[in-house]
Length: 82
View 1 (cartoon, one colour):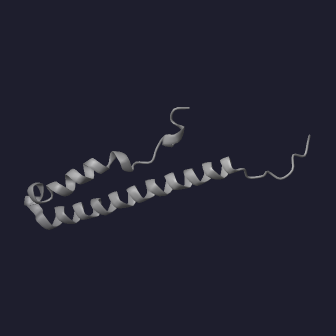
View 2 (cartoon, rainbow, N blue to C red; view 1 turned 180 degrees about the horizontal axis):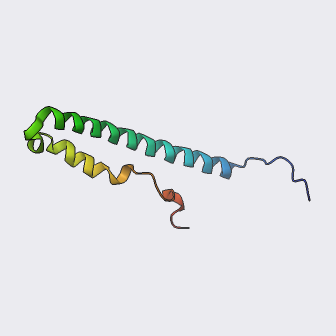
View 3 (spheres, rainbow, N blue to C red; view 1 turned 30 degrees about the vertical axis):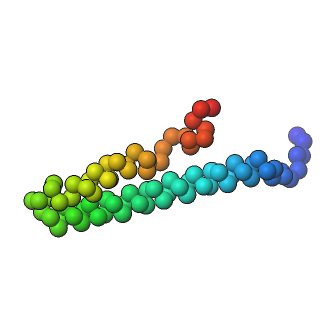
């Protein structure tokens, strides 16, 4: 068994780690924005009662439009082609 010693961080590994951190932060921001829209949609639904389909339509469309981009799953975009 060989003793390798301390691992030195190269520019490439630091860049990759920064990029991964940035991607996680961006995904988290998208998720939190979507959560706010969902909470507003829920409030609108309860407030409007039977008229919710007309009066909350814009919020529902925005929620459905933003939903696919705010999900965490699978591999990060920069690793999908590998």
